View 1 (spheres, rainbow, N blue to C red):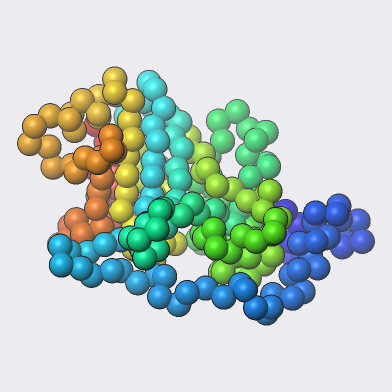
View 2: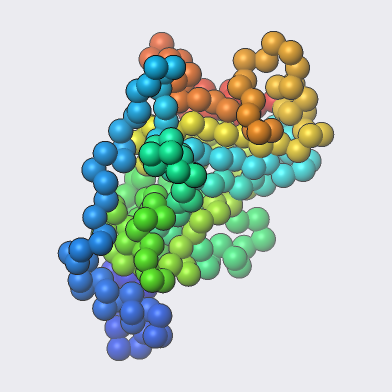
Length: 238
């Protein structure tokens, strides 16, 4: 992913894919890249609030709250939000290639810096990109407006750290999704959290083997004074 803001940026030495992205970036006002202006809205229906997005967290085996662990996060536009269609995969405006060189990669540091408008070595603004903004091998970030080689986009967000840090990362993503997302957690069946939430009387909602922290509950509990990060920590913590 090559950006004009990179210190060594030179369009003359770009590879063919990056040249296409750079040339397309000069035509960002072309038709076809417009976003639906209603996509950020929370949907109100008879049975309550419907979130426009989903944050899905997959926990690996051997997770413990006493030390750092691996997890994987995915972002989705909900099918309900897309007028009845299936869930739409989303991407993040980050170059995934540097993370492939790290033994236990995590996007937290990069996204934390992007949220604070601090310089970071990973290219991209860290904002979500819906699949509708990916066309012919190129993606347009609706936040920073850049045209990106879609092969370099990050679709699966790696995490390595503590539960408190995972809650921070989820809070960042929740904020970037305009506070309009359900949070799904998927655990191995041997995980202590899976066993605890599977007991009768658990407050967690279960659907398709995923434990859900629905938007309506997030709004209710944070409106009573609890912080979003604290509520996510409680949800993830065994």
